Length: 204
Image 1 (spheres, helix red, strand yellow):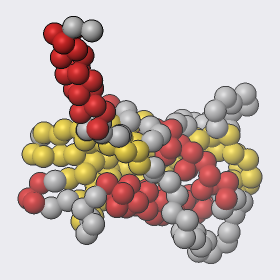
Image 2: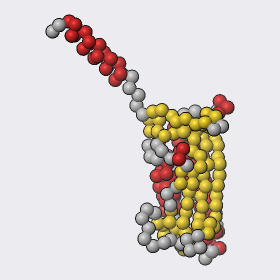
Image 3: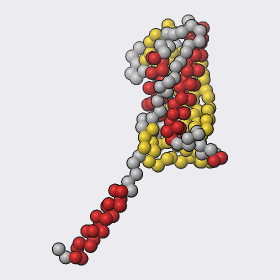
Image 4: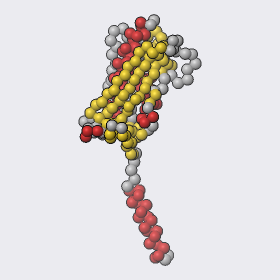
């Protein structure tokens, strides 16, 4: 074979080898219920004599995709490259709420997904902020969440629980970020659940 033909082939093979050697693998992170978390009822335990429909969370569009947001300035965010949520926040938070209410037997009946018969109550979740905050040379986890319990018959909001939490991440990595956000969400869900008991009993 002509040496003038061989030279471009060798160059192409070398370039392909360099590209494959420097290929970056995308890392995926999970939001999930802390394995060690235990919810303890204060006062009379459930299940409450009512049915509840759990709606899928309403996540602000800036945080609703697989992309993980980091805040750089007061009104500026960017998204991590090659680092993503394994499951979209709306899907995983919905499952966490359902699993928590099931595991702790909060209501006699729990509805989610396709609902045929209207439930007594509707539980709504809104995620307002879900980001790593990198301002002031600190790496912090921020979760701004709101839970609402609505009475189906009257469409009245009976109970609202809203918290905007920020915690410094000692490890300064996204694994700690995912773990911290998961714990904060679970803690606020537990606080909201504890408040549900008294509110539902007052409406019986």
